[in-house]
Length: 211
Ligand code: PMT
View (tube, rainbow, N blue to C red):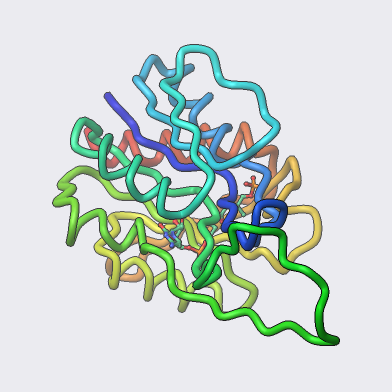
């Protein structure tokens, strides 16, 4: 099977030395890639900037911005049977990127932001992806409600709901705990464990759904 997996944060430049980003380390997405490779699958890993080693045998596509991740997914999605979107993509980027370093001029500085491309939301509607589509939902409140909403709006087969308000799991930790949300309101809780063990469980769940 061929899987496309997105991982890590994006960086949205403000000027040549500054950018907007988030706390994603890429560990969850890379663990999913490692788990899929261990099962003998082919993996295209589209990764934002992280400090993790490249998994052996992966086809790695390194990107920086949400627009670059969107273009990389568009270019590689058609050959995948399963797509898993674990990346923490910026929802907004600076409307203007200064070509020169922004100088300190006034006491306050207001930034205008514009929406980035919705990559997961484009998988079905724009890219025509017909394979098994897995989104993540990183939430700090109403976890299942928001995850079920994403599942329906973005045409996912599965949304991995991640409560990122809990200490010790989620962004940049080595462990995670999630709830798998499926159409029809079905849910499965995967308790706190290493991201490697959790990734293997998620992958087992997906492959069982496909056979
Ligand atoms: O990288 P780690 O440090 O290991 O942390 C793991 C994680 C917390 C980042 C991961 O488990 C996780 O929850 N990833 C999703 C983070 C996120 O941005 O969630 P969201 O609810 O904002 O986005 C919903 C879905 O849409 C996600 O599948 C996301 O990849 C996708 N998305 C979001 C915005 C956008 N412009 N395009 C997208 O495709």
